Amino acid sequence: MIPAPRIRHWDLYDYEPCAEAMRQQTETRDKNSADEIWLLQHPSVLTLGVGADPSHIHPQCPLPVIRSSRGGQVTCHMPGQLVVYTLLDLRRMRLGVRALVERLESAVLALLEEARTPARRENGMPGVYVEGKKIMSIGLRISRAQSSHGLALNVHPDLSLFRQIDICSNPKLEATSLRECGVGWSVDETARKFLPHLLHTLYPDQVCA
Image (cartoon, rainbow, N blue to C red; front, top):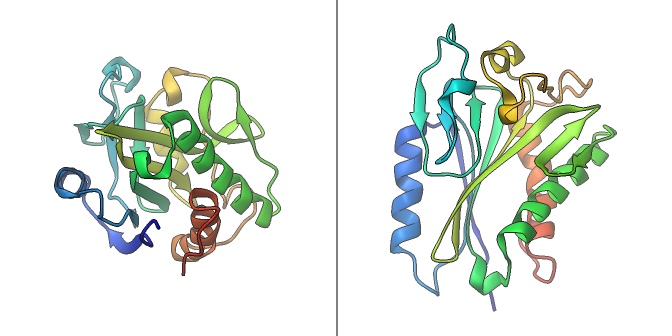
């Protein structure tokens, strides 16, 4: 029996201490430790994945830049964006990295279906897209079959900040948000609505309160 995941909610959590807390949680857990799901927002910051090219940050960008231990390219975090970190035992869940990415995407697609916002995957581009614009990004770290980091869903952030970077290393790719799609949810409301979709998708054979 997989123990029920612990759900942790924060408001604003600075990126670096949050990343350090994830690292410590991942390194100290054992086979009996419960998974954890963290829901939060970050103050405005750019993060670079392990192999990300900093040249995709525009020279005039005013935001601080932090090198992250996650995979993926440069991304932008800010208030108005729901960040969901999934600290999971993938061996216990019998999940590979690709399957985890697909489940995270599926949970967001289910939420957007609830919001009556048509969305889709794009081949070779992890995340979720609405009319060709990116609304959700994924960046994961996998160590000893333990996952950390997770996804970022744009609820009502300042989308102009995404123009300071090349999203997914693509200077033509734009960002969108739930608000831009006509959905008036707050970040807290989005988190409450998203969590059941995420739990159902990650643990389809388990009832999670």
